[in-house]
Image (cartoon, rainbow, N blue to C red):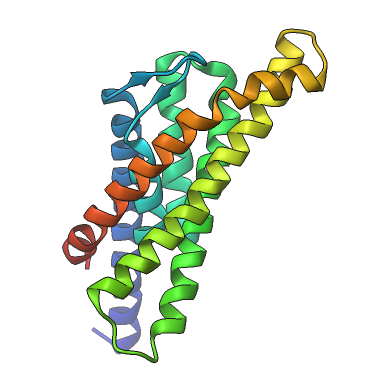
Length: 193
């Protein structure tokens, strides 16, 4: 077998592995979002799925990670009957994973010149999680303003007041997501390497 064929086969295996891991992370994100649900006053729920949204971006990179996070989360909304949220969830969760991935990559590149330690990795993970989850909180806040204003046929101001009720539960969910991602990232990174 020639060297070119060997390189092509290796590339195909990497692509196949990446696709399998993407599907696996989408499924885990969906299940993590659906299995444990703590209801909120806004008819939503807090769940550990955001940890897997962040892990998708951190482990799979910007494209595959965003797709896994968006598809898994949107699928969970679809199965759970939150139909109106499906498109918004896909976009918001994909953006959450993308931002976390880009921030984490940027921080690790900056720290590459220094000796890498577990503490530095944890700081990078937490910082990336905070930026990613900020996208989630703001994304749902903006979506709910317009959804509530349209659904209730009220003003944007009334939509803002209604949407504020969802901010605290989303922040709580974000904190748990960051904790889950920070704890599981080192373990999963070793498993998929």
